[in-house]
Length: 147
Image (cartoon, rainbow, N blue to C red; front, side):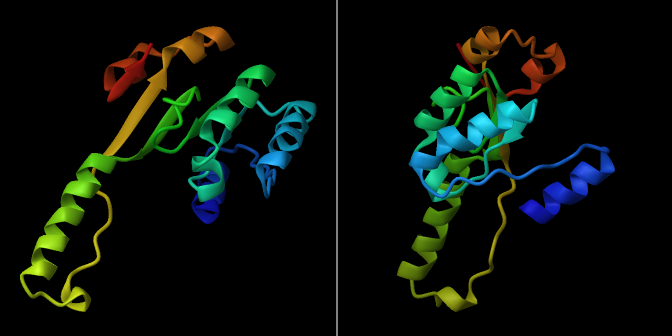
């Protein structure tokens, strides 16, 4: 993911900085460092550390008034936005694989698939608390608006 982000940042001439947190006890320190360095927005990667602590991160980010985007479920936890694969669709596809395996297919013979459907969610309450106006074009395209 970081390689793709580096390429995208270079393309848009945006400086990319990394802040590490190896546990929930380091979240506040990393977010405070972002504020000190005047970071305007950040991407929260999909990682078990962050997905299991999404509400804690979202609350700390809101307290420091930072814009952020994260994985599926992040906006529900209070983050500004989320972008990621449609988990319902992925589970539906996984059920098809389970069915094939139960009918005798060898797992090694089944193709590896990438997600094909992605979702965008915007937390309007968080946007309002940050004083951010979300462009109408994004609101129209969002799969979910959280109020």
